[in-house]
Structure formats: structure tokens, C-alpha cells
Amino acid sequence: MQFRTRAIHEGNEHDPHTGAVVRPIHLSTTYVQPGAGQWREFDYSRSGNPTRKAFETTLASLESGVGALAFASGMAAIHGAMMLLSSGDHILAGADIYGGTYRLLHKVLDRAGIEVTLAPSTDLDAFEEAIRPRTRLVWIESPGNPGMSITDIRACAEMAHEHGALLGVDNTFATPVLTRPLELGADIVMHSATKFLGGHSDVMGGSLVVRDKALYDRLYFLQNATGAILAPLESFLCSRGIKTLELRVREQSKTAAQLAEFLDADPRVARVNYPGLPDHPGHEIARGQMDGAFGAVLSFEVAGDFEAARRTVERTRLFQLAVSLGAVESLIEQPASMSHASYDRDVRLAHGIPDGLIRLAVGLEAFEDLRDDLDQAMAAAGPQ
Ligand SMILES: Cc1ncc(COP(=O)(O)O)c(C=O)c1O
Image 1: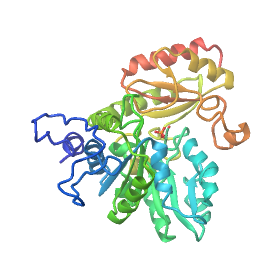
Image 2: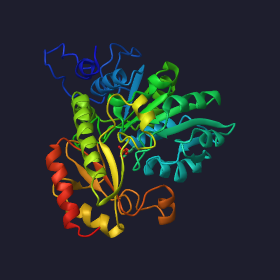
Image 3: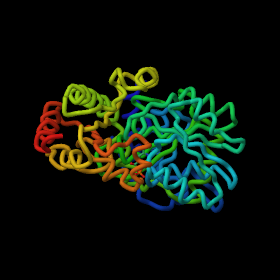
């Protein structure tokens, strides 16, 4: 079956008891057993829940995995993967990973004796130099945030495996519609389901998907032992969202590409970061590993300074001033004052995040309305 058909039918068989086309949300925490010491598929909802299972089944199918695990948030899912490591082990992560992942690595896992190095995953030679004998996990994001950097996932998988490490890919930005890391050799694919999978800014969730049953079993054990599972209502909302994933991602990506071209041609804009633009440094790799579109997030730099960007993001009317991405409504933010405000300025600039950078998370509104909104906001923000 095609991707969009599986998104609707895999894991979502009608309810055999009532015939309901949409399955009920199973809130029950516990399940009657046929006899003492005899177990059925479900016994206690931390260990397994039918509503969570439905979402996991759909997602595993869309990511070409053997199984998925749904977590309470994206961060819980990342933590779930990183619990595979022990004290003394080393994680090599891409230089522009999500800030929350950076914080988890440097302020939580370090206390468990897990060592970490950040290196540019876009430069495979430099990335490989940072590998150590105890590197057990390589962790990347593509596209990266907010510069939309592109990492060659297949090459990274080969590199990680040569050194005996697993490759984990945070696939939140690309979604399985555009990139399926497990098919490219990755071992773990992770999502903040809060973004495109949920798709409506109304559910927090996360997930891991793997292609190896033994790895699934290890992760399942860790999740059940620590408990950060996705609750039934949230699981239902993720299942509902994922049914329209392909339509949303393709349409939002199309609008993002149109906006990238519009901004690229605008003299008030100094630079546009979108992998779909031919002059983006990762364009060729993106063409090879992204399926027909380049995603719904882009960033651009207004000529001028911090204040010019701040005035612009505060003057949009349709784009709402908020962090996050992947939902039906378009969002705008200034990384320097919002998502990356905790960085020291020098570190931020070294990460390629200038004061004047603005990030757009493109939703499902009409291109013309979004274009006009940006146009009026830049005009109202005054001379750049
Ligand atoms: C790329 C990426 N990974 C992980 C996360 C963390 O996900 P959550 O906020 O669902 O915990 C985010 C959240 O913004 C993200 O953008």
C-alpha cells in the first residue's frame, strides 16, 4: 500500500466489538487476565495500551521500521534512546542539534558519566574525526535548525557502523513523508510528534522507531522501566493527525518553497536558508534523500540587526509569534531572542545564527496571504 493509504489504515482497523470506524480511546489502566499468571496482549497501560499501540503501528509502517515506541514528548523519546548508553560511553552529535537535546546531553547525561562531543555532521571528515573508541551512538538532525543544514544520512550511517556505533536521526523536520532514515541505514529514528505528526499544535508527544527487533526490545524495556509513555488521549490525537501527514507536509512544503523564492528575490532580505534553493550548500544531498520536497521550515536574515528582525517578527498578522513548528497555522520566531536566546552571543554566531535571523514554520494558509503578511511586516518594521 502507498504511504498515504497506510497512514489511514495501518493500525486503525475498525473496532471489532461495535463496528466503530474510529476506535475508542482506551483509558483503562489495567486489563482483566484469563487466569492468575496468564497474560494477554495488554495487562497494564504503562507496558502497553491499545490506543498507543495503534499510533505506534501506523508510525512504524510509515518509517519502514519493525516497531515504534510512543513517548510523552520528543525529549522523553530522545532520553529513551540515550538510556541505551552506560557510564563511560560516548555520544557524537551534530553541531546544530535541537537546543533541548544539547541541554539533555550537557546538563543531565553528563552526570551519568556519558560523554558527548558536538561536531559538524555536514562535514563528514570532521565528524568522523570526533569519533572515539567508546562512541556508541551518533545523533544527527537533517534538516538542522535554524540554518536548515543538510546531513548525508546514508554516509553517516556507514561511518557510524564502521566504528561500531548506532546512528540515531531526529526526523522531526523532514517527517517520513520526505525522508525515511531507516531506509538509508539509520538504526533509530526519532520524532517530536508535537510537530508534524500531531500537526495541529494541540498535542505533546514523541517517538522512536527502529528496524531491528533486538534493539526494539531493549528500548521497550527501558521505556517500560522508566515510564515516559504517551497517554491515551495524546496517542489518539497523534493517530488522528498522522492520517493527513502526507497531504499537510506536501502542501506546507510547497508553500515554504514559494516563500523561500519570494524572500530570495527581495532586496530587504540578506539571505534565505532553505534546502530547496539551488544555492543552499546541502541542496544536492537534500535532492537525493528528501522525497520530492524540502520541508516546511525555512529561515531568512533581514539586512540589519537584531532590532530589525525583532520589529519584523512582531509585526506579522497571520504568522503567529511563537516557537514550535509543523502545525496547520504558520509561526514566526527570532532565534536570537527566542529559541536560541540561552546561547552566549559569540557561541550563537559561531553556530551560524545571526542576530537578524528569522525562522518561519509554514502552515496550511494560502501562499499569497502569507507572502503579503511578510511583505507588510518587513515594510512596517521600517528601514532594514
Ligand atoms: C528537532 C526537535 N527535536 C526534538 C524536540 C523536542 O520535542 P518536544 O518539544 O516534543 O519534547 C524539538 C522541539 O522543538 C525539535 O524541534
